[in-house]
Length: 177
Image (tube, rainbow, N blue to C red; front, side, top):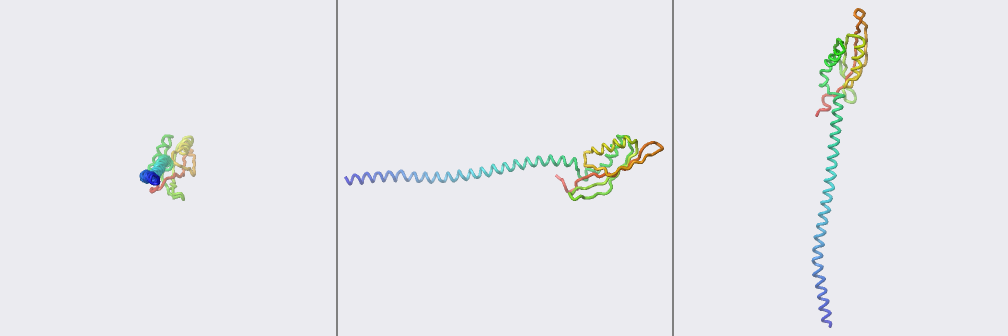
């Protein structure tokens, strides 16, 4: 009977060993796979964060380009304003005014913009000069009329105006694409 108990105990022990060895092997494989899954999850999370950051940057860049386009219309580059005096003369002609316009000096402002003085001389009817000034006020550029001097010419009833104004621009090194 002792022999039988030893045999049964030996068989039970052999079964435990036979079952335990594969379980330990499977446990090791499961642990390695679990670590790999955790690494992949971390990589995936980092990739999603990077993609979200990229999407946010891309959207920000689109908004920035739209804002730059508005700014470029409102505050053009100095080079864009080269024909501005000629444009003012053409606008004055639409109001039956004889006109001349020239740039004076320029001043760099603390914010980096340039303030360009422009002197405009017109001759014509008073109402046409006012309409011209109103058009200047609604200019697409940031434009400030500093002074207007009107002189009535008695012989033909027309007025002569001297207009001093400022238009603002970006310096050459700002806003280049």
